[in-house]
Length: 341
Image (cartoon, rainbow, N blue to C red; front, side):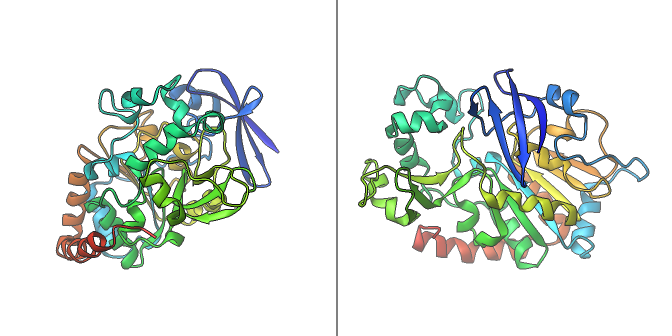
Protein backbone atom coordinates (compact mmCIF):
# COMPACT_ATOMS: atom_id res chain seq x y z
CA UNK A 1 0.00 0.00 0.00
CA UNK A 2 1.24 3.50 -0.81
CA UNK A 3 -0.07 6.77 0.57
CA UNK A 4 0.29 10.33 -0.65
CA UNK A 5 -0.45 13.45 1.35
CA UNK A 6 -2.46 15.99 -0.63
CA UNK A 7 -4.65 19.04 -0.06
CA UNK A 8 -8.41 18.95 -0.47
CA UNK A 9 -10.80 21.61 -1.72
CA UNK A 10 -11.34 22.76 1.83
CA UNK A 11 -7.56 22.91 2.38
CA UNK A 12 -7.62 20.08 4.89
CA UNK A 13 -5.16 17.21 4.68
CA UNK A 14 -6.34 14.07 3.00
CA UNK A 15 -4.70 10.76 2.20
CA UNK A 16 -4.66 8.73 -1.00
CA UNK A 17 -4.44 5.00 -0.33
CA UNK A 18 -3.62 2.72 -3.25
CA UNK A 19 -4.11 -0.95 -2.41
CA UNK A 20 -4.48 -3.77 -4.95
CA UNK A 21 -4.90 -1.21 -7.73
CA UNK A 22 -7.84 0.35 -5.86
CA UNK A 23 -7.56 4.04 -5.04
CA UNK A 24 -9.51 5.59 -2.17
CA UNK A 25 -9.27 9.14 -0.87
CA UNK A 26 -9.72 9.70 2.85
CA UNK A 27 -10.31 12.83 4.90
CA UNK A 28 -10.57 12.48 8.64
CA UNK A 29 -12.69 9.43 9.44
CA UNK A 30 -14.61 9.37 6.18
CA UNK A 31 -13.51 8.84 2.60
CA UNK A 32 -13.56 11.68 0.09
CA UNK A 33 -13.74 10.93 -3.63
CA UNK A 34 -13.11 14.16 -5.47
CA UNK A 35 -10.23 16.48 -4.68
CA UNK A 36 -9.23 19.55 -6.68
CA UNK A 37 -6.17 19.97 -8.82
CA UNK A 38 -4.20 22.82 -7.18
CA UNK A 39 -0.64 24.04 -7.58
CA UNK A 40 -0.19 23.28 -3.88
CA UNK A 41 -0.92 19.64 -4.71
CA UNK A 42 1.93 19.58 -7.20
CA UNK A 43 4.26 21.29 -4.76
CA UNK A 44 3.57 18.41 -2.36
CA UNK A 45 3.75 15.57 -4.89
CA UNK A 46 6.07 17.00 -7.53
CA UNK A 47 5.27 18.58 -10.87
CA UNK A 48 4.59 15.23 -12.47
CA UNK A 49 1.35 14.93 -10.53
CA UNK A 50 -0.12 11.80 -9.00
CA UNK A 51 0.72 9.54 -11.94
CA UNK A 52 3.97 11.10 -13.19
CA UNK A 53 4.67 12.00 -16.80
CA UNK A 54 7.88 13.97 -17.28
CA UNK A 55 8.87 16.56 -19.86
CA UNK A 56 10.63 16.47 -23.18
CA UNK A 57 12.37 19.68 -24.26
CA UNK A 58 14.26 18.25 -27.22
CA UNK A 59 11.51 18.71 -29.81
CA UNK A 60 10.28 21.73 -31.70
CA UNK A 61 7.08 23.15 -30.22
CA UNK A 62 4.16 21.38 -31.89
CA UNK A 63 1.07 23.05 -33.34
CA UNK A 64 -2.54 22.07 -33.92
CA UNK A 65 -1.66 21.37 -37.54
CA UNK A 66 1.08 18.96 -36.41
CA UNK A 67 -1.45 17.11 -34.25
CA UNK A 68 -3.91 16.97 -37.16
CA UNK A 69 -1.21 15.63 -39.49
CA UNK A 70 -0.27 12.85 -37.06
CA UNK A 71 -3.94 11.81 -36.76
CA UNK A 72 -4.63 12.09 -40.50
CA UNK A 73 -1.57 10.05 -41.42
CA UNK A 74 -2.43 7.51 -38.71
CA UNK A 75 0.77 8.06 -36.79
CA UNK A 76 -1.60 8.31 -33.81
CA UNK A 77 -3.67 5.14 -33.63
CA UNK A 78 -4.30 5.02 -29.88
CA UNK A 79 -5.90 8.34 -28.92
CA UNK A 80 -7.12 8.86 -25.36
CA UNK A 81 -9.67 11.64 -24.78
CA UNK A 82 -10.27 13.25 -21.39
CA UNK A 83 -13.43 15.36 -21.21
CA UNK A 84 -15.38 17.37 -18.66
CA UNK A 85 -18.56 19.41 -18.40
CA UNK A 86 -17.33 21.96 -20.94
CA UNK A 87 -18.08 19.61 -23.83
CA UNK A 88 -21.74 19.40 -22.75
CA UNK A 89 -22.50 23.05 -22.03
CA UNK A 90 -23.03 23.71 -25.78
CA UNK A 91 -25.84 21.13 -25.55
CA UNK A 92 -27.52 23.26 -22.89
CA UNK A 93 -26.33 21.40 -19.78
CA UNK A 94 -24.92 23.76 -17.12
CA UNK A 95 -21.45 23.06 -15.78
CA UNK A 96 -20.84 22.92 -12.05
CA UNK A 97 -18.52 25.78 -11.15
CA UNK A 98 -19.03 28.74 -13.50
CA UNK A 99 -19.92 31.79 -11.36
CA UNK A 100 -23.57 32.71 -11.74
CA UNK A 101 -24.51 30.14 -14.39
CA UNK A 102 -22.95 27.02 -12.86
CA UNK A 103 -25.01 24.30 -11.28
CA UNK A 104 -23.63 24.87 -7.79
CA UNK A 105 -24.74 28.52 -7.90
CA UNK A 106 -28.32 27.58 -8.79
CA UNK A 107 -29.29 24.97 -6.20
CA UNK A 108 -31.00 27.26 -3.70
CA UNK A 109 -34.36 25.76 -4.61
CA UNK A 110 -33.35 22.47 -3.00
CA UNK A 111 -32.73 23.96 0.49
CA UNK A 112 -29.33 22.33 0.80
CA UNK A 113 -26.97 23.02 3.70
CA UNK A 114 -24.31 23.71 1.00
CA UNK A 115 -24.23 23.13 -2.75
CA UNK A 116 -21.99 20.04 -2.83
CA UNK A 117 -24.32 18.21 -0.43
CA UNK A 118 -26.49 17.22 -3.36
CA UNK A 119 -23.71 14.85 -4.47
CA UNK A 120 -22.58 13.65 -1.02
CA UNK A 121 -23.53 10.09 -0.18
CA UNK A 122 -24.23 10.74 3.50
CA UNK A 123 -26.63 13.56 2.65
CA UNK A 124 -28.26 11.37 -0.01
CA UNK A 125 -28.99 8.69 2.60
CA UNK A 126 -30.48 11.40 4.82
CA UNK A 127 -32.52 13.09 2.09
CA UNK A 128 -32.48 11.71 -1.49
CA UNK A 129 -35.20 14.06 -2.81
CA UNK A 130 -32.92 16.95 -3.90
CA UNK A 131 -30.74 14.63 -5.98
CA UNK A 132 -33.72 13.07 -7.76
CA UNK A 133 -35.18 16.52 -8.46
CA UNK A 134 -31.88 17.45 -10.09
CA UNK A 135 -31.72 14.05 -11.84
CA UNK A 136 -35.02 14.81 -13.56
CA UNK A 137 -33.41 17.90 -15.11
CA UNK A 138 -30.13 16.22 -16.07
CA UNK A 139 -31.55 12.86 -17.10
CA UNK A 140 -30.22 11.37 -20.37
CA UNK A 141 -32.53 12.14 -23.25
CA UNK A 142 -33.30 15.71 -22.16
CA UNK A 143 -30.36 17.02 -24.19
CA UNK A 144 -28.66 16.09 -27.45
CA UNK A 145 -24.97 15.57 -28.27
CA UNK A 146 -23.07 18.30 -30.09
CA UNK A 147 -20.20 18.42 -32.59
CA UNK A 148 -17.62 17.59 -29.91
CA UNK A 149 -19.27 14.28 -29.01
CA UNK A 150 -19.58 13.33 -32.66
CA UNK A 151 -15.94 14.15 -33.32
CA UNK A 152 -14.96 11.60 -30.67
CA UNK A 153 -17.42 9.14 -32.23
CA UNK A 154 -15.69 9.70 -35.59
CA UNK A 155 -12.31 8.98 -33.98
CA UNK A 156 -13.81 5.68 -32.83
CA UNK A 157 -15.29 4.90 -36.25
CA UNK A 158 -11.85 5.40 -37.80
CA UNK A 159 -10.33 2.96 -35.29
CA UNK A 160 -8.14 5.59 -33.60
CA UNK A 161 -9.91 6.02 -30.26
CA UNK A 162 -8.30 3.95 -27.54
CA UNK A 163 -10.65 5.20 -24.82
CA UNK A 164 -12.65 8.22 -23.72
CA UNK A 165 -12.43 9.20 -20.06
CA UNK A 166 -15.33 11.46 -19.13
CA UNK A 167 -16.34 13.28 -15.97
CA UNK A 168 -19.86 13.72 -17.31
CA UNK A 169 -22.98 11.86 -16.16
CA UNK A 170 -25.26 13.18 -18.92
CA UNK A 171 -24.88 10.17 -21.23
CA UNK A 172 -24.29 12.30 -24.33
CA UNK A 173 -21.27 10.20 -25.29
CA UNK A 174 -23.47 7.10 -25.49
CA UNK A 175 -26.17 9.00 -27.36
CA UNK A 176 -23.57 10.05 -29.95
CA UNK A 177 -22.92 6.37 -30.60
CA UNK A 178 -19.67 5.83 -28.69
CA UNK A 179 -19.88 2.22 -27.40
CA UNK A 180 -19.87 1.80 -23.60
CA UNK A 181 -16.74 -0.37 -23.82
CA UNK A 182 -14.87 2.64 -25.22
CA UNK A 183 -15.96 4.83 -22.29
CA UNK A 184 -14.65 5.26 -18.79
CA UNK A 185 -17.39 7.22 -17.03
CA UNK A 186 -15.23 8.28 -14.11
CA UNK A 187 -18.10 9.80 -12.15
CA UNK A 188 -20.58 7.07 -12.94
CA UNK A 189 -23.63 6.67 -15.13
CA UNK A 190 -27.42 6.70 -15.18
CA UNK A 191 -27.35 3.55 -17.34
CA UNK A 192 -27.34 1.28 -14.28
CA UNK A 193 -28.54 1.58 -10.70
CA UNK A 194 -28.25 -0.20 -7.36
CA UNK A 195 -30.53 -0.55 -4.34
CA UNK A 196 -28.85 1.17 -1.41
CA UNK A 197 -30.17 -1.48 1.01
CA UNK A 198 -30.22 -4.95 -0.59
CA UNK A 199 -27.69 -4.05 -3.35
CA UNK A 200 -29.81 -5.48 -6.17
CA UNK A 201 -28.81 -4.26 -9.62
CA UNK A 202 -31.23 -2.41 -11.89
CA UNK A 203 -31.14 -1.06 -15.41
CA UNK A 204 -31.34 2.68 -15.69
CA UNK A 205 -34.56 2.63 -17.67
CA UNK A 206 -36.31 0.95 -14.73
CA UNK A 207 -35.98 4.23 -12.81
CA UNK A 208 -37.05 6.46 -15.68
CA UNK A 209 -40.78 6.72 -14.92
CA UNK A 210 -40.24 7.47 -11.23
CA UNK A 211 -37.60 10.11 -11.90
CA UNK A 212 -39.69 11.80 -14.57
CA UNK A 213 -42.68 11.76 -12.19
CA UNK A 214 -40.57 13.46 -9.53
CA UNK A 215 -40.67 10.55 -7.09
CA UNK A 216 -37.87 8.65 -5.36
CA UNK A 217 -37.55 5.14 -6.86
CA UNK A 218 -37.81 2.33 -4.30
CA UNK A 219 -36.75 -1.29 -4.52
CA UNK A 220 -39.81 -3.59 -4.85
CA UNK A 221 -38.00 -6.25 -2.81
CA UNK A 222 -36.82 -4.32 0.27
CA UNK A 223 -38.28 -0.81 -0.24
CA UNK A 224 -34.82 0.72 -0.13
CA UNK A 225 -33.94 3.70 -2.32
CA UNK A 226 -32.60 2.75 -5.75
CA UNK A 227 -29.69 5.02 -6.59
CA UNK A 228 -28.33 5.53 -10.12
CA UNK A 229 -24.70 4.45 -10.31
CA UNK A 230 -23.49 8.05 -10.18
CA UNK A 231 -20.33 8.37 -8.07
CA UNK A 232 -21.00 10.61 -5.09
CA UNK A 233 -18.52 12.32 -2.79
CA UNK A 234 -17.64 9.59 -0.32
CA UNK A 235 -17.92 6.68 -2.77
CA UNK A 236 -15.26 4.65 -4.54
CA UNK A 237 -14.42 5.18 -8.18
CA UNK A 238 -15.92 2.67 -10.62
CA UNK A 239 -13.65 -0.28 -11.31
CA UNK A 240 -13.60 0.67 -15.01
CA UNK A 241 -11.61 3.78 -14.07
CA UNK A 242 -8.54 1.65 -13.45
CA UNK A 243 -8.23 0.90 -17.15
CA UNK A 244 -5.93 3.94 -17.06
CA UNK A 245 -3.25 1.56 -15.80
CA UNK A 246 -3.06 0.02 -19.27
CA UNK A 247 -4.58 2.73 -21.50
CA UNK A 248 -2.32 5.66 -20.67
CA UNK A 249 1.01 3.86 -21.12
CA UNK A 250 -0.23 2.72 -24.56
CA UNK A 251 -1.58 6.09 -25.71
CA UNK A 252 0.17 7.91 -28.56
CA UNK A 253 -1.96 11.08 -28.26
CA UNK A 254 -3.92 12.65 -25.39
CA UNK A 255 -6.72 15.12 -26.10
CA UNK A 256 -8.05 17.05 -23.07
CA UNK A 257 -11.19 19.11 -23.58
CA UNK A 258 -13.82 20.98 -21.62
CA UNK A 259 -12.47 20.39 -18.11
CA UNK A 260 -11.10 22.52 -15.30
CA UNK A 261 -8.84 19.64 -14.18
CA UNK A 262 -9.73 20.47 -10.57
CA UNK A 263 -11.14 17.10 -9.53
CA UNK A 264 -8.80 14.34 -8.41
CA UNK A 265 -7.85 11.68 -9.23
CA UNK A 266 -9.24 12.34 -12.75
CA UNK A 267 -7.15 15.50 -13.13
CA UNK A 268 -3.81 13.77 -12.67
CA UNK A 269 -4.49 11.45 -15.60
CA UNK A 270 -3.28 14.33 -17.78
CA UNK A 271 0.19 13.53 -16.49
CA UNK A 272 -0.09 9.76 -16.88
CA UNK A 273 0.95 9.52 -20.55
CA UNK A 274 4.59 9.07 -21.52
CA UNK A 275 6.65 12.24 -21.80
CA UNK A 276 7.07 11.74 -25.56
CA UNK A 277 3.30 11.65 -26.17
CA UNK A 278 1.69 14.83 -27.59
CA UNK A 279 -1.04 16.40 -25.46
CA UNK A 280 -3.71 18.65 -27.00
CA UNK A 281 -5.82 20.91 -24.78
CA UNK A 282 -9.05 22.28 -26.26
CA UNK A 283 -10.51 24.40 -23.51
CA UNK A 284 -11.78 27.77 -22.39
CA UNK A 285 -8.73 28.24 -20.14
CA UNK A 286 -5.28 26.85 -19.55
CA UNK A 287 -5.64 24.22 -16.83
CA UNK A 288 -3.63 21.62 -14.97
CA UNK A 289 -0.16 20.90 -16.37
CA UNK A 290 -0.89 23.25 -19.29
CA UNK A 291 -1.19 26.15 -16.82
CA UNK A 292 1.67 25.64 -14.38
CA UNK A 293 5.32 25.35 -15.20
CA UNK A 294 6.97 25.31 -18.65
CA UNK A 295 4.96 23.22 -21.13
CA UNK A 296 6.25 20.14 -22.87
CA UNK A 297 7.40 20.83 -26.40
CA UNK A 298 4.71 18.47 -27.66
CA UNK A 299 1.91 20.20 -25.71
CA UNK A 300 -0.58 22.17 -27.81
CA UNK A 301 -3.28 24.44 -26.34
CA UNK A 302 -6.27 25.65 -28.38
CA UNK A 303 -7.88 28.17 -26.03
CA UNK A 304 -11.44 29.40 -26.48
CA UNK A 305 -14.84 27.91 -27.18
CA UNK A 306 -14.57 24.10 -27.12
CA UNK A 307 -16.84 23.44 -30.11
CA UNK A 308 -14.93 26.01 -32.18
CA UNK A 309 -11.64 24.39 -31.20
CA UNK A 310 -12.84 20.91 -32.12
CA UNK A 311 -14.21 22.25 -35.40
CA UNK A 312 -10.81 23.82 -36.14
CA UNK A 313 -9.14 20.44 -35.54
CA UNK A 314 -11.70 18.66 -37.72
CA UNK A 315 -11.11 21.17 -40.52
CA UNK A 316 -7.34 20.69 -40.26
CA UNK A 317 -7.95 16.95 -40.55
CA UNK A 318 -10.29 17.37 -43.56
CA UNK A 319 -13.00 15.54 -41.60
CA UNK A 320 -15.76 18.16 -41.60
CA UNK A 321 -17.83 16.60 -44.44
CA UNK A 322 -17.78 13.22 -42.65
CA UNK A 323 -18.51 14.84 -39.31
CA UNK A 324 -21.47 16.79 -40.67
CA UNK A 325 -22.86 13.65 -42.35
CA UNK A 326 -22.50 11.66 -39.13
CA UNK A 327 -24.22 14.36 -37.10
CA UNK A 328 -27.10 14.54 -39.56
CA UNK A 329 -27.63 10.77 -39.64
CA UNK A 330 -27.12 10.18 -35.93
CA UNK A 331 -29.09 13.28 -34.96
CA UNK A 332 -32.17 11.91 -36.70
CA UNK A 333 -31.77 8.62 -34.88
CA UNK A 334 -31.30 10.29 -31.50
CA UNK A 335 -34.35 12.49 -31.97
CA UNK A 336 -36.46 9.40 -32.59
CA UNK A 337 -35.14 7.32 -29.73
CA UNK A 338 -34.54 10.03 -27.09
CA UNK A 339 -32.67 7.50 -25.02
CA UNK A 340 -29.09 6.33 -24.59
CA UNK A 341 -29.71 2.74 -23.54
